[in-house]
Each structure stands twice: as structure tokens, then as C-alpha cells.
Image (cartoon, rainbow, N blue to C red; front, top):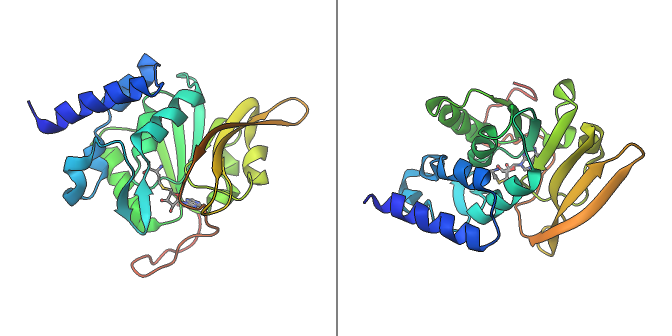
Length: 223
Ligand code: SAH
């Protein structure tokens, strides 16, 4: 058997032991080829349960964290989701199998180019992308049933909370850069918000603005 297929089956079993019991979520992970979201040299590690480098000093999240967030999003086919931090595009690809549409924002243009090529190659046509600053959200497409942030913010951005539908919620790692972060669930209620801690984590930081490093001749937000 293909060694990647064997590794994938092992990973799915491991995720189940770690508490990812939603069969629909596990199926979406099984159907998303993580190796396609990695630099060629790292493909054989695609089903190790660990984060891996994807360039621009960023990482693809650990499969357990992707699975945890996806399970906690409690998606259905009718929902519109905003993701901040496209990165490799892997989390967006998993989500796109479970909801109506994913809007996803990334501040590194080169990462977004690669992610878009993957979405297209894999026939994932319900993902809409933008190079921009996730702190601003995507007001024209709001309100969102769910928002998922895959980089850690010092505190939950007000603009994102404002773009949640009433009754909807956001999952976001909150905390300082190198100390304890928590994935928080922030629910927008009729009267305000409710915040709960779900899981201690360590994410790369959510940074302001669009990255304009070498190789990125970005022309500004939007796209
Ligand atoms: N969801 C990704 C994980 C990427 S790591 C995956 O599945 O591969 C987090 C990503 O968030 C990085 O690519 C980083 O560039 C991006 N990011 C950080 N701050 C951001 C911001 N303000 N707006 C948009 N993207 C941001």
C-alpha cells in the first residue's frame, strides 16, 4: 500500500483517540490530501501529527488542531465561514467540504498564490480568497455564521466580532506571542458576546497589514 495512505489511516485513528469523533469531520480530513499543501521536500511527512513549515516563516497547522477547530465549528452545508490566515490553504480546503462557502484572507501574497492554485487543482470552487489584513475582516461578505482565525491575536479583533451573525461564533487563538494562548469561542448573542476557553495552543502571531517583503509586489488590500 502507498506509504502516505497508510500514514493517513494511522493519523485518522490517532485523531479519533484524541477526541475527534465527528465522522463527517474525519471524512473531510481523509478526503483532503495534506501532501498537496506542503513543499515537495516535506510530502512524506504529510500525515505526521505536527505543524510543518510552508515558507514566508509560516506553518501549516498540526492536523489535530485543524481537526479540533473544524469539529468545534459545528458546520452545516448552509453556512458561510470566514477564515483568517489562509497559509497553505489546508484548513480552508477541509472547511470547504463542510459548508456553503469559505472566505479566506492571507497577508502573504506568495502563500495565497500557491493556495489558490491548490484550490483550483482540487476542484474546490466554493472558496473565495483575498490578500489583505485579516484584522479588518471582510465587511462586504458579512455577516458570517462562523469565523475561524488560524493565527494568535493579543485580543479578539472588534471588527471580526462585528462581522459575526447573531447566534454565530468565532474560534480564535488569543494570547501573547510566546506564552499561553487559548483557543477561545466567542459567541455573538442578541445582547453582546460570550467568551469561553477551549484549548491551550501555540500559534504563529496574527500580524497587522499586508506583508510587502521581497517577492511580494503587492498592490494593496483586496483582490
Ligand atoms: N490555516 C493555515 C495555517 C496558516 S498559519 C493552513 O491551514 O495552512 C497562519 C497564517 O496566518 C500565516 O500564513 C500568516 O501569514 C497569516 N496571518 C497572520 N496575520 C494575518 C492577518 N492579519 N491577516 C491575514 N493573514 C494573517
